[in-house]
Image (cartoon, rainbow, N blue to C red; front, side, top):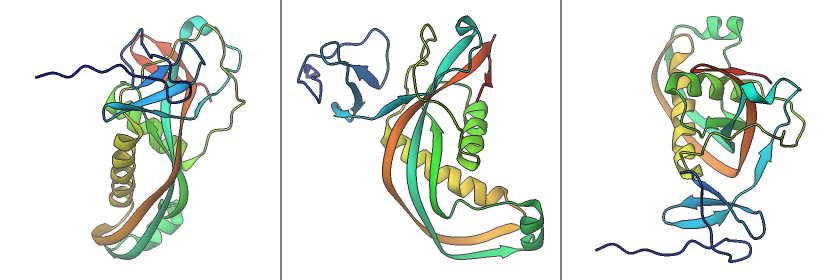
Length: 194
């Protein structure tokens, strides 16, 4: 048996509706963003990066969950590669980091590439939504992004020089927000502007 319930804004209790299928619902009454997660809605902080002035017709906003993490590696066994890691500047994500996880439905390899790029080199941007640039709908909630962040961390450790034999770690999340970055869109390819 199905149960249908009305989704209400976490800020003003107004009824929520959506024009596109997205995990983020904007309230028509108070304009607050709401995250749809586990059958309920929750307040979420949303930030838009302004576009540096290129044609909005050829751009799209790509959503990212930006997760504040504290990763502590208690032990790690690596065979070989320690000097190469140092020389090549292959850094771990242990410690406090902001990890970027692509939240929109884009090709998986591109999403991983953008996530690693922005997690390793935090993008610098001015805040403000540039008019006439469409948003890619959000396809995962921040809980799913947390699981992906842990996968990113482990994948980064495995990709570094040497052979990872074992690792003991803990990962804690202290905050999150949704950030939309502008990208150039040519056919099926996205190219970072920032």
